[in-house]
Image (cartoon, rainbow, N blue to C red):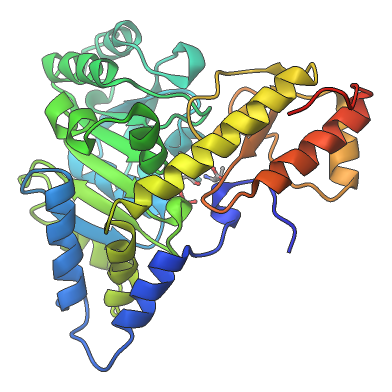
Amino acid sequence: MQQHFASDNYAGICPEATAALLEANTGHAPAYGDDDYTRQVSDRLREVFETDCDVYFVFNGTAANSLALATLCQSYHSVICHPLAHVETDECGAPEFFSNGAKLLTAAGEQGRLTPEAITEVATRRSDLHFPKPRGLTLTQTTEVGTLYRPDQVATIADTARRLGLRVHMDGARFANAVAALDVAPADITWRAGVDVLCFGGTKMGLPVGEAVVFFDRKLSEDFAWRCKQAGQLASKMRFLSAPWLGMLTDEVWLKHARHANAMAQRLSAGLVAAGIELLFPTEANGVFARLPAAVEAGLRAKGWRFYTFIGAGGARFMCGWDTLPATVDAILADIRHLTGASDAIRS
Ligand SMILES: Cc1ncc(COP(=O)(O)O)c(C=O)c1O
Ligand SMILES: C[C@H](O)[C@H](N)C(=O)O
């Protein structure tokens, strides 16, 4: 089966998650999260984040983000996000729908990152009754264009949010890649930096399905189970959503796989630069964003390569996953060199 660079959600289930899933498939277990596997992995996540966080498992990232944001605000509030934020560009209005109408307000920033200045401008732009009062802020780590927020950047943004009366949500669809790239403690770029709720992506890091919604402020999660149930996000066989996490969170398997994906992105990025292809953003995690000549893009697609060009600020996005092979990276680089006429003497 050919590997692709369209998304890290093209990859299969990593061996460790598969083993944990099969191990959980023994006999009967209580439903709706009342099973031992869900208890075990929730406790394990409390160890990973070094705090008594409240943990829920939902089927996908759009549900995780939308339901988490809905806990931060009322329908007449607004949530500030980056213009390239997934919640703004790729969730089909789900955040607005599940919050019964909270409005997303965009605040620009270079390289996919929010800035305190832009957040402040949007949050203080109007205070009249006709404007949806800002109450939430969402940042994506890693960002939709493959960049990172360093711990101090998260803290500065969260401090700004707190001063403005905003609750902070983190879309961590690629949180594993961020922790691996930054080499920090997960707590240092979440609750210690002022994040109130994290949507921890499981799907893209090697699980079969599912995301963890991790609340660092239990006042926010008081009724979240009911919100999940009403949204059709309460799995009856929850153990099969939660147990694979045990495979990932043992011996830091999640970070091993994230480091590999990040390394493949570095390999690809270096090869593209060597072939004279312009990068649109720095390669800081597992995504590579490049400006491809139209003929090269068409040629790659004709050769069967799948990659997105609708993400971020245009250009081509190449996402590396836990299972991306070095040979796959070298194969697309060889095709790109051939299509650009770059010398084969250039090695990736
Ligand atoms: C940054 C980001 N957030 C959220 C999501 C939503 O995830 P899902 O496609 O599982 O709804 C994605 C999708 O891959 C994503 O890239
Ligand atoms: C863009 C698409 O929705 C998916 N979130 C991805 O990053 O591949």
